[in-house]
Length: 355
Image (spheres, rainbow, N blue to C red):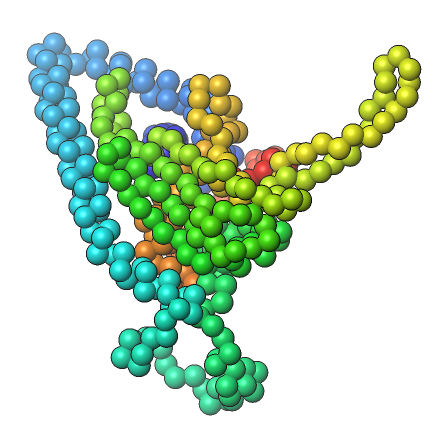
């Protein structure tokens, strides 16, 4: 997805063997200046090796690079055709996802045959069944429409999305009735659509986020090509109702007149953390600072995960069965090495809003 992430991975693999064990070394690899220095060192080593080769060998290596370049062009064509196939198969998924939305929102009640899915989960103990019956009541389910808070629940079950959701976002996300993805062959792109029921917060019925992709080798560095990548994104304007915008907060500031000495209070609006900042990403331009570049890269990752994993497998995120790859690692595993107190820097509190 993000070329910066790929470079960080490359730098980590090519750094000292201790970097995988030493947290301080790992943090240095995420420092743009340290990473640039590491890449420059790698380039110098590569150039030194190249110049050490006999002229005839260098000539043959150039022939291999010509072949590699042609191979990469074929690979790019392959990925473009895969994208075209995704556009074609999207039509077949559409009916299934529409049925899913109808069930979630209580517009369709599945029959017994449609519910006949064998989970493989053992029957609950009788004692637990009795407790659940008492808690929910024998006819409790009859008063429930669809699957309440389906999308809010699955978002909160997904770490990368849950980090974006603030307490003031939850009442709004209860009105989220469906999330879908539409892909376009030309230009290569996809759009995320968040459908909302009428609510007291904004007038939009659909909020959109569009991601634009590139699937061709870079002329300046063709060997960096690793498949399609997101290169930019565009959010949408949210038409907030009066005093309902949860992405900003009002603060009062005291001002003093320079000559007269009189004071006054003024009210200013500042951006605050909210899930809905997702629809107002940083503008991708040459003047973007490192912090906003990181926010944009995180945004690209979230968009890709929503499209490739969360939307297609929404029910598994709702039940908590789906999980991130990082969850595979044992958190209780201990590292034998001991580090001094100044080996690991304390994380500073981030005052800036999340994506």
